[in-house]
Amino acid sequence: MEGKKPYAVIILIQLIYTGLFVISKVALDEGLSTFTFLFYRQLTSTVLLVPLAIFSERNKTYSLSFWLSVKIFMHALIGITFSLNIYNIGLKYTSATVGSAATNCIPVITFFLALLMRMETLKLRRMLGISKILGIGICKAGVITIALYSGPHLNPLIKYHHFGHKNNAKHSSLHSKQNWITGTFLLIAANSSWSLWMVLQGRLLKEFPSKVLFTAIESVFSALQSFIIAAAFERDVSKWKLRMDMGLVAIAYSGFIVTGVSFYLQSWCIEKKGPVFLAMSTPLSLVFTILCSLFLLGDAISLGSVLGGILMVGGLYGVLWGKRRENYEPKPAEENAGVCNENKDFAPTDDHV
Image (cartoon, rainbow, N blue to C red; front, side, top):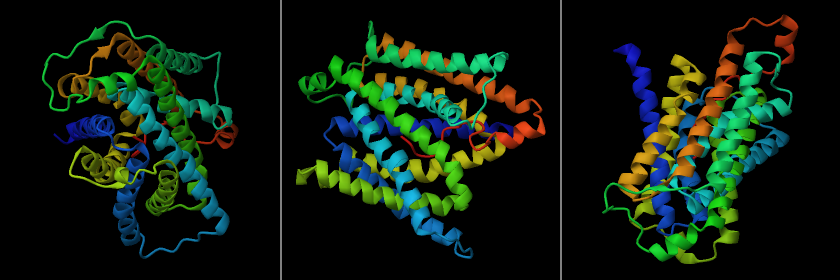
């Protein structure tokens, strides 16, 4: 029974993320502002993480210089505030299925960025190097397929949906072909920003080793940044009011369940089975999201979304297979000294989406 526990945990993790995609999509379609959503989400995360960080690190002392504070501030701006703002816009323009499919690109994009920064190596004459290159190419093909190809639709199996779209004319206008293409590339841009955040995080944690306190500080910075952006772009006072609707559910769910519960479960899973094991479970969320979109949201899933999602998953496994084989191979001492291992397996981390 103990050996099956990690498998149950990864299914629960992916179900949590499926809930995030679906609940966020419903809330955004019902009129929740993308800007105020992120502010309240980060504010909720701050309320959760700051007391936890203070309690867990109360007997330790860390030095936080001015320049390190600036670095952490910019790191939060790139990977959290900017990434999640444009991610929410992209999700609003597309669908929960596309939002879920796009997360499969994160390990692939992270590897590509690490390669550009010479934090990773690529041996083109070896099968593992070819696997990585093919993985990147297949992932890009998946993005293009989702953005540019629609194809026939798989209509919902149940005609009545509790979270069905109340204003079909507005919904159709929002999901026009142009908005769909824009939204798809916004999702990829958001995931690219998040991947850059992951690559840079290893260096910052060397300067400030407490991950819990580091995460709490970034949450505070991001809440402040999100408030400034929301105040600049969302002038309608009614958009700031919290009501007993799906908007409030989405804020509480993303702030407490995703940031709190999922953060702990992912850390436990990585400790028990390693980051590749967690990363390889990511496609489960896509499957769960497609099912929820059909049965709960009443979305008609396009063939292009399904094919693009399959290509992204194929690209993910291609890169992960190459990384896994590479990690098991012995390396010369000088090569180990020259290659950074901060992003060894590129598992998705806590609460990007």
